[in-house]
Length: 174
Image (cartoon, rainbow, N blue to C red; front, side, top):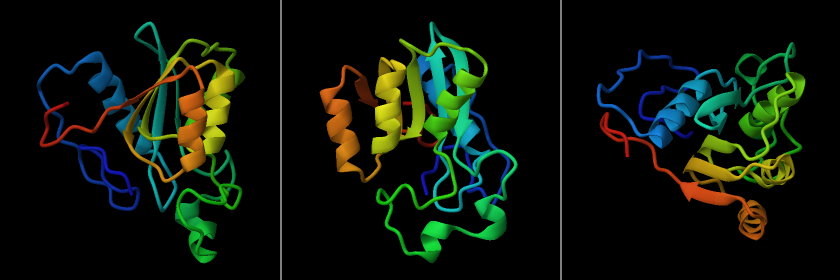
């Protein structure tokens, strides 16, 4: 499970200890993505996403079951029950990815994300990558990798600028 520097697992909530130094814009938005990830109801991986344009937050999203449906934290993980490896068979999951939720929130509220920048705690999967390309996202900052070769190929072939932005360590942002 990916761990932001100030985020605990979804099943073990601990208070955050926030650093006092002034972060760069990239660290600021990545820290917000980490905070958003705390809302995740996935038992395998907590992911947060923030879409920004002109240094303004447009939407956020985290991974979990569709609105109004039982959460995996309550009923268990289908992927674990079926022993599905990470990065494979995305359709065998009741959850929606953080990037998908951020795009859906933009659509629901009539917010254009074309030309926006995605800050995400993890590298997008192939499904999310295709959606981000079609949504017109210009850049993606991600904290941790994700085992999806097709996603890497899609993003490499796209015009999206992909930037690995490791999480902060020991209270200092990178």
